[in-house]
Length: 127
Image (cartoon, rainbow, N blue to C red; front, side, top):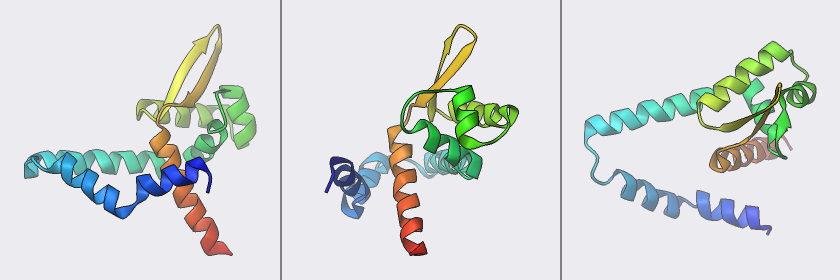
């Protein structure tokens, strides 16, 4: 088993996850939990667009310029830019400007690992 698989298994192990959730939410009021539920829904809303998942897949292998992402995703520059902006605003991607070029890279590895895990599960069900 590769390191990423081991790490993902540990990260997504139901016992570890339950313990983490219990510890993180132990002293939160119902009102504070409602804020968390709203933020989680917003988080998943950002990932609910297939174009954004394509962008995450493209940038997953390393920093890319907007034009590289456009080429890899096969979409219009305006569409890709709109989705890159949403992913950046959500904290999923880093943005770096160099002259007139803008580069994006992964800011949140946990999101990438979660997406990879879900993609693998869906892919397995297709076989």
